[in-house]
Length: 181
Image (cartoon, rainbow, N blue to C red; front, side, top):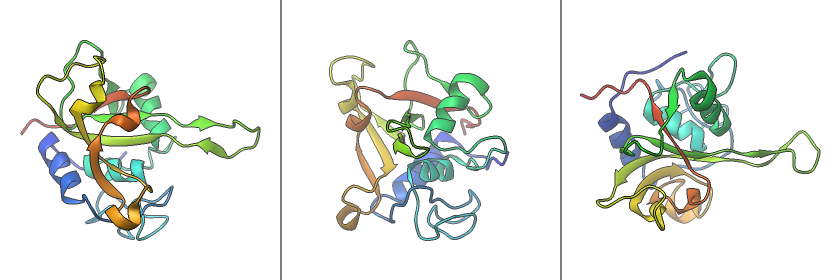
């Protein structure tokens, strides 16, 4: 397991610096030691990144965890069961900038081995004043940076939005290695 030491602020700053850049391809994402998530170093698809490759890069985690890959489902599995890299943020805890918001993919809807609907993950970069988790339209009060193929030709793959993509299904997880410096 490779973890590049980081603080919440460093992860947020790295994410914000990439807004408006890049191209999306499922399975893309460079090594945490590369300058950018789009670099060739450790990247199956040099020049491209996906949502989990992006969040792995900005939070300082290696996508290859040995016994599993740190994709959206790997993050969820780790937060729920392993707790090596992440833990689930309970409903009574405050949501913090630097936390991740994720929903899992749906596998095998048509009885073939291919993933039918991938999950999605992003890093929360701002929690608006008055945020009430699971209150009405709570997702509008979170700002998230994520890598997405939608409108990438115009906006770049990395964009900052509210959390509406996660509205009905988002799980919030906290990286365990953040320092508070």
